[in-house]
Length: 144
Image 1 (cartoon, rainbow, N blue to C red):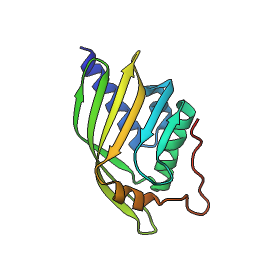
Image 2 (cartoon, one colour):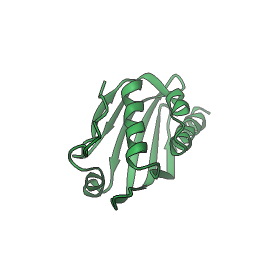
Image 3 (cartoon, rainbow, N blue to C red):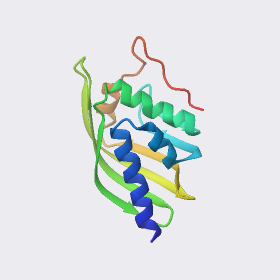
């Protein structure tokens, strides 16, 4: 059943990301993957191509000082799409933290994640955590 293999693919990518294993995450994505995140912080928008998406994920992991956790609370799959309901938490040593629910929609093609759209349930909380502009010493990842 394709739906089950799609769910397993997305779960593996989530688990690898939480461990900081971006090589395994990269294997889960199509080379021409597109990632869209909603909001107004310095990391939102559309990232095109595997290098841009991995750059975004590496920045999220580093900015959260390795604390970023995305717990899958429910996952649904169809023939070519996986919908993930998740609880996202992260904190930083400067006192910033966030705890939001989020929906992630991943389109699957040829056994890989090809198009991702992500929306937090509390844009304000996520935007406050990241800020509108990159902090000193940080640059926004290339968008591809």
